[in-house]
Every structure is written in C-alpha cells, then in structure tokens.
Image (spheres, rainbow, N blue to C red):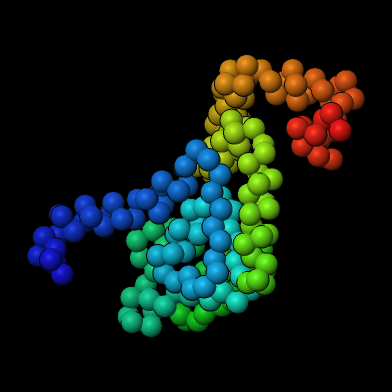
Amino acid sequence: VELENKPPEFDRIFRLATDWRYRTLRYFPKPTIAMVNGYCFGGAFSIVEGCDLAFAAKEATFGLSEINFKHYPGGSVSKSLANLLRPREALYYAMTGRTFNGDRAAEIGFVNAAHPLADLEKEVMDLAEEIASKDPDALSACKDGYRFSLEMSSEAAINYAAAKSDQLSLRQKDAWRSEGIGDFLQGKYRPGLGGHQKSGD
C-alpha cells in the first residue's frame, strides 16, 4: 500500500522479492531440497521449483488460487510452471484454481515423490545425507551442467560440459580420474553399486 503511488520503487522491491526465489535458490552452489508438509500456494511454487529436488507429504495441499480472485500466477510462478509441468497440467491448475495433494504433485512431476507425513522428514533427511556424502565440487557441476544446458543449444552445451569437466579436474586436483576411475580400473569399486567412499569395503 505504501508503494502504490511509487511504481519504480514497487518494481524494484518486487524484483528483489522474486529474485531470491527464482535465481538465488536455482543457482545456489550446494544442493537444495524442498520438503512440503502443509500448504503450498502461489509464490511458494517458485520456491519448490527453484530447489534441485522436492518431496511432499501425501497430505500436503498445492494450489494456484490466483484465478479465484481475478488474477493469474504472476511474478516468477508462470515461469516455474513452464519449467516443470506439461502444458495441460500447468494450464489446468492455473485456470481452475483447483487444489491437489502430494501424490498428484509427484504424478505430474512437481515433486520427486510423496511420502506419508509421518515418514516425510526421515525419508528426506536420509536422502540429504546420501547426497551430502558425494563430492561437493561434482555436485555443484551436476547443478551447473543441467541448469545452464537448459538455456543453450546442443553445441554450446557440449562445449560448456567440456569446460566444466576441465574446471572440475582442476578443483579436485584430477581426483575424479585418479581416484574415481582409477579405483574402478583397479577393481576397488563398481560405479552404480555404491559410492566411491565405500571402495574399501
């Protein structure tokens, strides 16, 4: 209300409020995981979509209620819908304002999976611990390789991936070759059947 007669200032504040949800979360250097255990409406969609992974309680309630008060999913929300959902689902929920639960959120790809509320925190924390055991530079490269490739042509993405591999080798002092692939060649562990940290088991 204080800024209703100050459009430039309102626009500046609005962009700041939107930016942390859309850009800061998306390009945060460490893995981010959303855990929805209650209600997720409107702008919260961008928070969930901005995270790398997302999980919900089966009992959670999602919705885009803007249409019910003569508005639409504005700010970064429409872009979040376009990033994750197929057109039919995105427009269905945007144009009806209908709610959906955690199982439906998983079915349409808005979250990775839905768990009973009683199990949600344990399931998500177990996964977080598993991811935290991975090499942090490799995890960061996973995020960058995926996120930036979305905005590139195939040729640009391949060139970016080559440069990213060189950067990763430099940061790890070539550990992914000497330890990762090296230990595989020496029969110390088999990729796909456990993390590298278990190579001595």
